[in-house]
Image 1: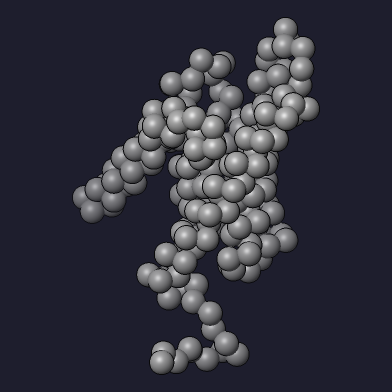
Image 2: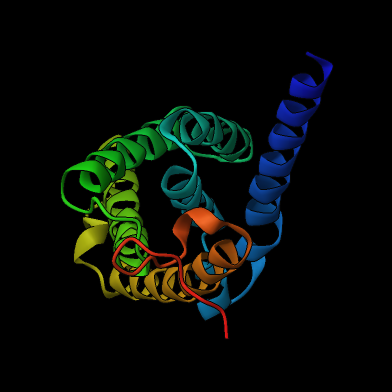
Length: 181
């Protein structure tokens, strides 16, 4: 029991550190580097390599920290993250059924786009004085492109890192184990 409480506490602290790093550190950079969105990347990582329950807990922890440090209305991040997680989970188990690098990259790219579209749509409809829908601006698509690029890079490295330390995702040819050289 104590071990489970300790593991869960470490999990919550780790996710909180990721969220605070995203809010305080990466968002403060200029241009290309400010588009790094660790929260979406970790959310897809947890869903892909672990399970939906762990990803839901991560979404709530990330949303809690984002809501506290945001000047937007309360609930935008929890709605955006949960809808993104729901769509990614359905996509993962209905179309991308294998656990390959390609599936992981596609899930990350789709998650970035879905999260951006949902959060920007909610922001637009909550601020009706704003005359332009952000999806139609070039800044939105440039930021989405930068986030997709970061997501692509981190997906490749994190997937290979996970394969190196986990036998479950190693390639298995025709039901036999790969022989090392």
